[in-house]
Image (cartoon, rainbow, N blue to C red):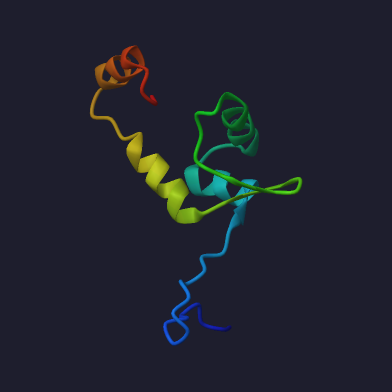
Length: 85
């Protein structure tokens, strides 16, 4: 398999994008959950290429990490502030 290291050319390394099913599996969700999140605008960032929806795995994991809470009251306070739950 070819390397993603393009340091000789100065080009950034490319991270392969994953489809909705793979992103959902990474998060432990159903693919339809990600589809609903896209409609609401509260899911992980995605790329639309024509009709194809793709996700950067690192962005999906960063989104999940940003939703880490220590208690249920944190989610309530965040929602009251208009932040992502």
